[in-house]
Image 1 (cartoon, rainbow, N blue to C red):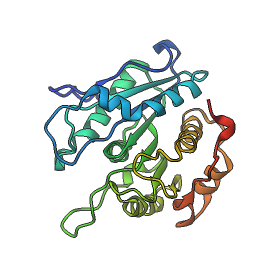
Image 2 (cartoon, rainbow, N blue to C red):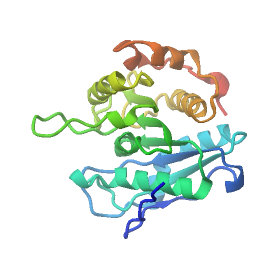
Image 3 (cartoon, helix red, strand yellow):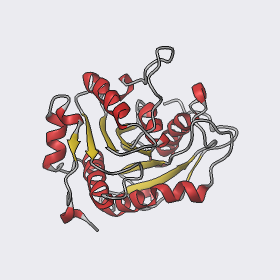
Length: 253
């Protein structure tokens, strides 16, 4: 496949949290949050901190299957309009994963603005699944084209959003999921009631749900009943699935 050129102001992958390259059977690319507009380079420490718990959880859960987990360090902190820098960096990171590890399935897992980047870059041919946590999406405007969803066809997609998120609008992620579901049946969305942007109040449940989804998407591990039900249910049921307190207690590490 044609490789994308590494940006002059290079995006890069953080140190792998999983096994050595020779054992890799799947890759998770973690996409941190950011802001709407910024030409500054993000702090690697701050970026890694925002997705560290998820990365550690997935690295441990996928050790037997050979999961390599990397944080993607963007060139710029901002989305920056039509430049969509984080989405371009996510696509470059998927190319880089293929270069390093060969023909293995890739999951894009993003938080906030990183969730939007994961959704945009989900059409990369190596990507088989997309996880978007509290994705930052632009408000609906007649002068702005809607967020693309056709690139998600053939991918497994999970969106998770807190109902009390005041930084990113959960209703916008629901509307995007509804449009994506029309093009791709393998889309579901969970609502974390009374939780905010950081999804901290039900952190263990959210991490367990992410593990369940990603291990199933990368390695065919059997999904839990709630995830199976959410994927099978017609809209809006499968797109407003409540995340139950105590979900995944038997999976916690």
